[in-house]
Image 1 (cartoon, rainbow, N blue to C red):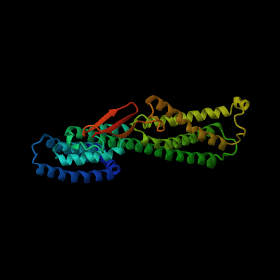
Image 2 (image 1 turned 60 degrees about the vertical axis):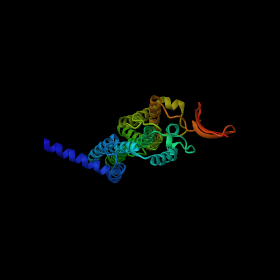
Image 3 (image 1 turned 30 degrees about the vertical axis):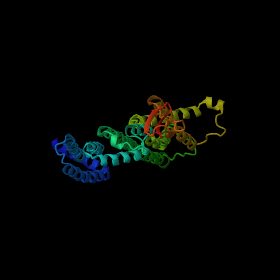
Length: 345
């Protein structure tokens, strides 16, 4: 039993290694270089006894442990935390350079994070880096790192869902081929003529599943654009549920079209003469999985419309000739954050 568990554990590690090989290699190189940089800073700054040094070394040990377990996400977080602690050992000139770098990088962040950074460390037009406390700068770095961690996590969720949908798509296409072989090749039925009810229902379900999977793949690409993490929107069971709902809707349409109600309502101007017609309608019905997605969006809430008016960050310069002093002022309004530089002369 122990031997079997060891083999299973080895196989799982090999699969993780295969999936994370490139990311592991990138992080391994980054970590190896940073260890030398950190030790050089400690020696040059003569701050080996500082508390931040011990904590940074502990975080790097945890980072290596996570890397051995192929937990790349956790390893990156430990690495970023170790780099943030390095702020407490920086000189004033180094903190100034880091502050300027953060101000430039803020344009890549989401709106609220960008505002938070500017409030913490000021705008790039305001040279107040010397006044920024190391603890404040550490928190600003945390806001930046959290943004990239969230982007990576959303990409992981989307990648996992795409992998599941790819497997389902391959299985569905294989099932359609097998169904065609049995119905046409073995039973000599024709899709252009009448087929037994059981075979036709099977075909309707298979093509409905094909439409639902196709629809899910098309619209899942929008997950990476969300500003917040939605585990529910990328859950595998939710994806299975949407596909099954689409199959049920296709069955309803099929029975409706074969009922006397359809004959009296005349929804279609053409007549359904073959199984091909039902399969095509079933494929289109598969896109009804979007109704389930809309229900999920209503449950978890949607991001605000990109076309709607968003909060903006503006910089105004108001020059008042008074006594020659320059004073930066940060003010917050309902629809925007305004950083105003008042110059009194």
